[in-house]
Length: 515
Image 1 (cartoon, rainbow, N blue to C red):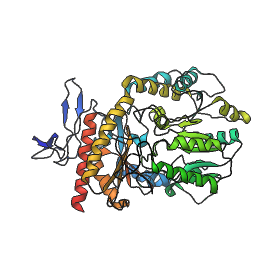
Image 2: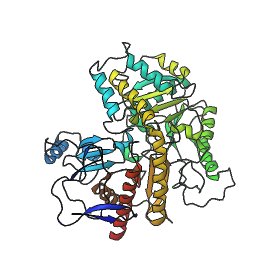
Image 3: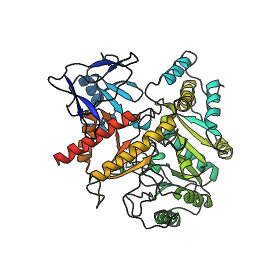
Image 4: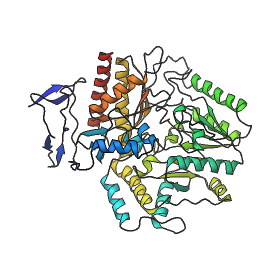
């Protein structure tokens, strides 16, 4: 029997009464589409009802979970096991839009987009159709031949950028794009040193590991020579910050005595950058790398106008400014198509990946004609970069973002999520900060608001697992693994947001009760 009860946040839901079901419960929407409503295992009776979907997944008939884990341990590189999320792993079988199903038929709301990668939705019908059409024509050529999809896509992608950012080079990943951006910057400026923020993530190649500033990704080998990290202008965890610093619907709870239009925190962090110039690099540098909002670092935002002043200082020292849009690009921040636009700057080079192909392996560098010309000093060949299939998929992604109104959805749903999460921050002592723009959101967890000390990893894992068990997948980030990352496909709805807010509230409530 099903009974309506009110959720913790006041929304009416359906819960199971009497005997739990042994199989999937299905129901018909008004459209006639059949939906799977629950899982093979009974849902806890006080968990909010999951929003409906329009797809019934295929029944899984493949190898057992036990066999998959055996292969994972024996035949996959140990790193695959090391990065496996959750104590009880999720065995994904199928996806559609914002939903994922495991091999048991349990449905999950994907609020991490498989690491901020699925931009318009899993197996989006428009993207699938474009891929199928190209698969029947030609899968692969290289740049030694001229193929239409490459040129159609490069022209389309360039149209999304302001002058003089009009020259495109396609790659297979974000790490590769950033690696090549380092090379281009050094060739063009004839300088060597590159500056990035502490807490940043720009890739895992031997060169980009120098840009990446997080001990978890570091190996005891020489890497990234010529890379220097400067203080991240984090207005929540850093030494300076106030209540008007960042371009976000939600500000920190730190006190602020700044006059209107002036940010003392920004001035202090710029002072730290100047000190880096004075102490750690030569008088002339090659580049400055910066994510418009840090991704793996935990959705860290900088004071308004910080990047504008930083770019000026970098260019005065002969360097070029590189925006890493791997996670913030393609409308995710809502207010703008590119994250750098929210800082009122124009970089000299932009790198991107992840959402560019909605999960299809692809990356890109967009720069000026002058910088691109410097790359011609030698010969660089990329076998798979810009292959016809990737270009067809990526072109469809751009069309789908526009046709589905994904950027506006990011702004509307993301702003609502953040304002509601801020209410939970005010309710719970362990929620220290809520921040972000659009659907690039971070929720930083602390032991208590006074100390701002990171919530221990064991506690983070407890909450993380609880949220997963109730049907929602999110991510974690931050230097100490203390920040929950919410970066869903941009097709999520207000109803999905409400469902997650109920689940998140309940998970924190459960943790506080256990504590």
